[in-house]
Amino acid sequence: MLTTNLTAAHAEVKAEISRTDSKTALLLAFVGAVLAGAWTVARDLPLTLPALVVGGLGMTLLVAAAGLLLRSVRPNIRGRHGFPLWATLTAEEVTTAVDRDLAADIAGLSRLAVAKFTCLRRAVDLTCVGGALLIAAVVIAAGGAA
Image (cartoon, rainbow, N blue to C red; front, side, top):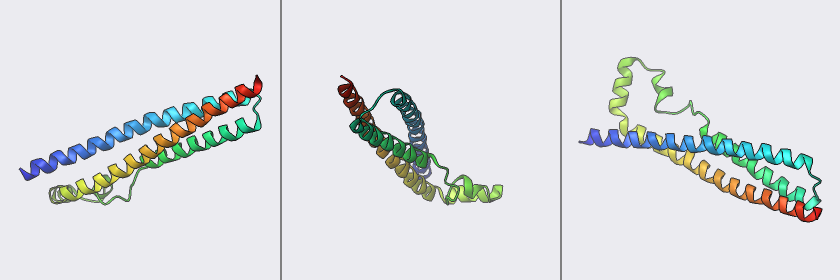
């Protein structure tokens, strides 16, 4: 029963990491598209100083969000459990390590999942604020052009 519960918990944590990585990939693509689109639009518009300042701050926040997203998916090859450890073991040692260290692996993966989720949450917040600032910059630029 305990092994079944540990195996289920292990699978749940690995699934959560996978979901977080998928969300991170989608948000990174979105942030990249917004950055590229904003840069393209900003190049062709006559912008006032307030629009440049607000838009520049928005772009900076989006770049910071992209950095957090990249940090979230950066491989950790110094990890104590999982692939990096297994790559140094023989087949028999892998079996022993998995049987003995499943609870430790769950704890390690859970900490990894929380760290990834925290980076993703912060990146979403920065993306929202950065996007709002870009919209404000467009409004300021449109108001200045009228």
